[in-house]
Length: 285
Image 1: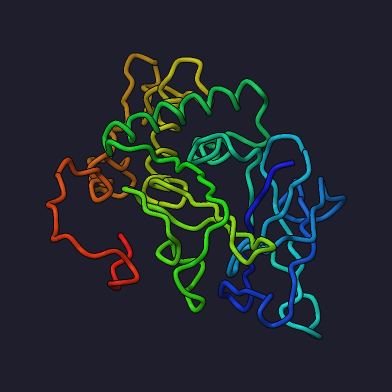
Image 2: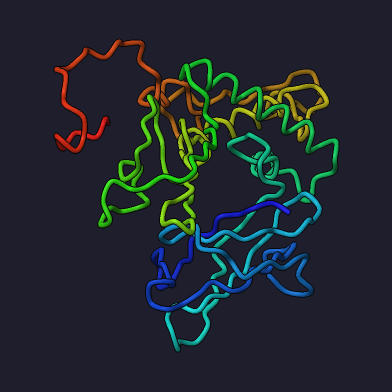
């Protein structure tokens, strides 16, 4: 089984049923967009991991693309509703920001993929990710760090805010989940580092460049080589399509499009010494 964090969508907006007495009940995995027939797997009920985030333990199913139907009760006494907005590529936890299925659709390769196609596309994804990591000078897959028995700075703090916790790290961080202990403290899971899978620009770059590398690789998945625009009747001449220049519609994104997330090699100037909290409002961030 693998954990999957689900965010309920209700009335076109992300919604948290728990404060209103609701709950997230059942998740169904379907192997086709129609979400009909016998589900490939079920999971539930979900465990609330934080505000608006619920964790399902997914069943073991074959790798591939699945279309989800999630049933939840939005508030106490209300009728159950279903959310069919989620599509999921399994397995999770491969350390990549996109999936072989996303690259296959970019190439026009029909699903499902066989084992060899999946392995080739994962290799292309990891090569494209390596280029992004080298350019940004930082990993694009965050590290999960758990800190036990933490107490928030104040009772009224938003526990989904990383600044609510005595956790200081010289990197981007966000709260992934928290669990209350019997003594009132919390075990808190933090995601530390740049979360490339949540960054649409990074996902697009990796997906399109992985697809293009496979398209041009001899024997690659969906390989067509250079795109042919025309061939003479006698086969004596061939014209090739010219690739769009950067900035034109249909052009591949360039590494420069990711420059705002590039790690800057600038040392932070030291500030004045502050007394420790609670003698000042400064909390070390």
